[in-house]
Length: 285
Image (cartoon, rainbow, N blue to C red; front, side, top):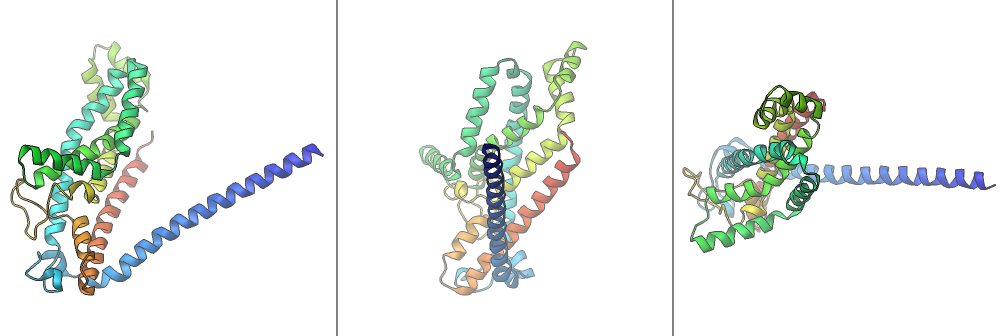
């Protein structure tokens, strides 16, 4: 009798778990398709060559002529610059963790825990911190300020992603390299980096996608302008902020342009995600 009851409860538990997994999957997929569907329905009809290649003109936010070329180019400038700056910091730190700090277990775990905490900090906090520093230093909103804040924001993400990649390097491979007279520097950059290069590229692409799609961290730092920046000291527009400002308009045509901007941003992030998946799929850890 007890055995039958145990089997019954196990089967019931298994069915309940399957139902919850299926329901959760359907919920996530339905939300995803509802978001994509609303963007396609409302934004795709407003996408045209003019909106992609021209900058906002006088009265753009009142339904007149213009486009979002300034926001597209500004987003690419900001995300590309932030990703390069973050990469120059993240790669040496991730290699340092897995070559030098790896000997000190508690220190490694503490470092990774702090990075995970920084990863979880909302981006608006980084934006607010950057804004406070800009006020104290007497700086204005600019592309450079946005690059720095976004770089700080995505650096913990990139470090932890690379760290997980370098952790898969066999310790015997590192020990063999060191036994042959290689330094920790040579072992890190010639062994670990070479083995994990596809994963590093994936981490960079994911960080780039996070940088180009964030609005809160640049709201007070990068500013907004209708022009394409020609200097890092000039303010710049970004697609997330363009969507935010256009949705705030009471004019339906301008709101549809916001969905068109969201469509462009979604396509960019989708391309980056697909590239990251392809590169990750070719790399076997």
